[in-house]
Length: 309
Image 1 (tube, rainbow, N blue to C red):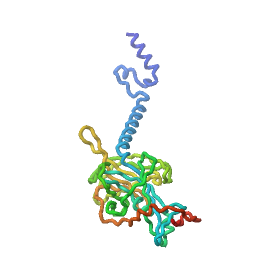
Image 2 (cartoon, rainbow, N blue to C red):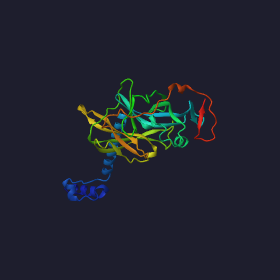
Image 3 (cartoon, helix red, strand yellow):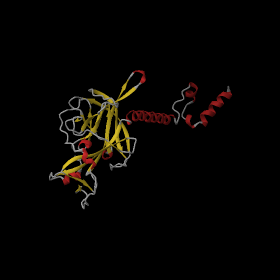
Image 4 (tube, helix red, strand yellow):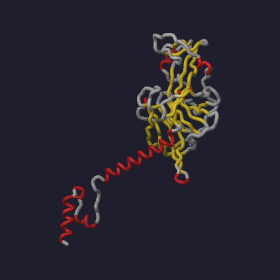
């Protein structure tokens, strides 16, 4: 019996982790909190969160792409670029593939809208902006491929009255994310697509950042103000909500898309309403003009239009 008491006392004295545990507690089996267990729990929770983030990323990543949209200027039948390029400006924005088509931001349909150089050079309204080349690349890829977008046709229509988001119908129906266009309370995840720098160019690397987001979608307020970090690096965003199905299957549905407001801030356009059909799109340019190549005139001012011969 004395030997047992001696062993118990040695354990209490020699173990820092049990230093604050009384002898009575030890005998009764009350071991309390042991140093390090709390950190292990935190680490497990972080690991679980990371895995959940990876699951969501994997579920939507393949349906996301970047649209690189170029435009040039036209005046009296002549076309103008900038800095000896065959185009005057270009935009980079996130597109989202869904069943039957994809969603495009205004940057694709009106790439000149937020171009400060265009606003200055065309203050006198002497030029008309027209679309030039359209390119697309998967979010996980680095190669842009030319694509034929149906801009200015009935296949590209504004989703909201602000015309900050557009629906582009596929010529042939294809798979993509499912859309949640219902009203009511939603608990999901907001995914923001960030460029690695504030400069948007063909070499930028884009990554997704996630934040949990709860929302009560109402018919009279489908545009929700957002305040993301580093907004100047964002090229787009989407809001997805989980739908739990039989067999433990989880389907992430697209419930909203990030758009820019008139003051260039980000907002979430929920998809609770059907796309409108009465919006005015910009007049399409002649796609045969894309084949016009040649030597451009030198420009002494980087924003001045450069004639294309």
